Image (cartoon, rainbow, N blue to C red; front, top):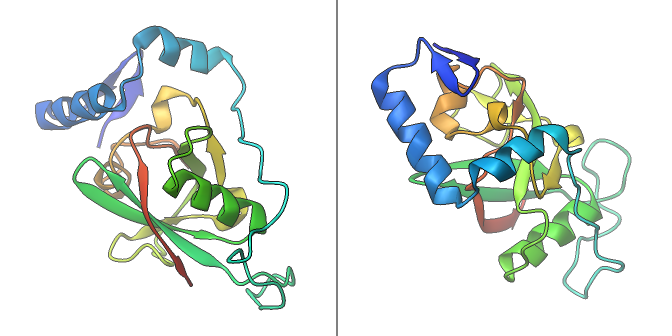
Length: 172
């Protein structure tokens, strides 16, 4: 649909811009912090040192030889949801920490794979689990609603919804 140019999405409808501005206001992130995020490197939250008793089960087979049973995290972004597969003990533990009220590394960030919903149906895209990270800050161009990824308003190959909140964590 639109092309991101200097703080605006060229070709986006007024409705898209209005919804994106609501998302940005809901995230509570100031303009100065967003600008600083462009300059700053993406900060990845430190993983928990050890798994709890209800942590990821070792010995499963997620197809990559890691021996970890994958989980699916469901994120709420304003009034929409999307799902991401978590394939490492560190990501699963971090998601549990966020669900328990943790504040570090709240922004999911990963590469968009278009044309394949994976665990993210009914959307026609998913986040590549091998690229998933959790960040404190990201660049602005990858922020938006899941529907913005669907209709290509988010033109970046990365997706990083600032207002995302994890609402469920289930075995895949």
